[in-house]
Length: 280
Image (tube, rainbow, N blue to C red; front, side):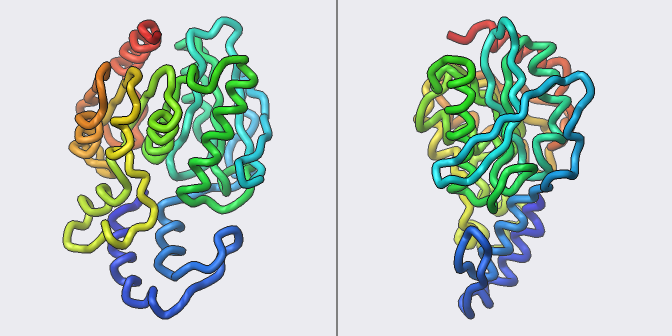
């Protein structure tokens, strides 16, 4: 999520955005400003790029539809005796195949049933990503996972990293969840852009909001959140501000020297195990 360039280019193009629109398939008429913003907030890599047959992982390809009929794809990795069922929402770049190691870790080391899905426009999912669409996609993925595990949707643990954290917060705030796990995520997209480029009117220019800070107070279940204190994409303070807005019970894991895309350390894995053990 290159928010510095996003902020700069949004400000440059704001002056020309009033001159007219451009057509984008699946989104209709758009201003150059909106088209640029979407291209920088969302960085999908479509199939076949990626490792789609990770050795020894044994995932099941699942296909489902979003509320507007968009065809979506995910990986489902059930556990014979799961401690919990997790829906994982990934970050803004790549596709689900780039998160194979994360899914393996959650399943093998933590004894979890896991489903990861690609937002519209990512991987093998059809369509073009936008804020409303990816939130619809997450709800459809959660509903499918609930059906496969034969549990209620609100019994699923939601886990999101970076952009996926905003997706997970929206689901938890609207519908509840057994637990919420957030990794390197933000209060809102405009907050990240404004912090990276404070002299520009990012807050008024950005259409994509993912305003987790205003939503997270509606979630009343357990929260586990972690953030690296050297994060150069989503500043550590922004993660802390989101945590402050959340209800109890909640736990924050600070990762010394951790940057945005670093592998999660053993300390977080231990805390995750404890968090899962105490879920209602």
